[in-house]
Image (cartoon, rainbow, N blue to C red; front, side, top):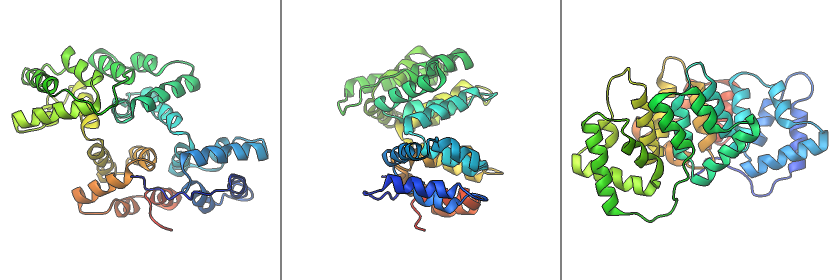
Length: 314
């Protein structure tokens, strides 16, 4: 369930006027920006951008980029983008890092629906003038390239139908590969990149029932192996994305110095989807409300925006 509180009836022109006023004069009225954008869903934010451009012949996103700075600016920028375009930006940032953040590519590929992932690929191509899979292939190598290119190009069956016999046989294939430490086996990659999420959940449950532990617990190996953590991330995202996102949030806050990129990424991408459920998992896992943990670890307008997106009332 979503955490943002967006009114059903909105005057997009009035919102545009409030944002224009917030960006004029000495300094910006960050509270006004949060009060508008923090309470509008993706469709409403798109209409506000259109209204702003019609009224002032200016791109609202560029104006906000020029007025804001730091973690607050990055959070606002990522929030105001359309979801597919936002994922395209997140993917590009991850790919172009000196050491590519392969976990983010796996996360986007494995937690979005087939239609959403297709929209991300289209947005990426429109924005960067080459394909997502092309850039992933150009910035990775070996088994990681094989896995990630297959994940970003996947268009899985998205229905409820499952094949129990197939799940049983593929759970055995996965276990045999894990037992022999052949984590990069082509059959492992084939299963993870072609089967529906419902089918994979049944396969992973069969694996757990047969071997008294999850496949992710068995995907442990040499800490110098770069492929294995990406494979593990993929499995976790496909099997239980809410638990995966809870762990990303937990790690982003618990580290020495907050990982603002990870914290922002999860909150802005899940606020309109399942962030309420992720908050419940976090509270249960850590005995502390996520809002409280975020408030303790952040500050200023950045903190205010994140708490708004988390559903905290003003």
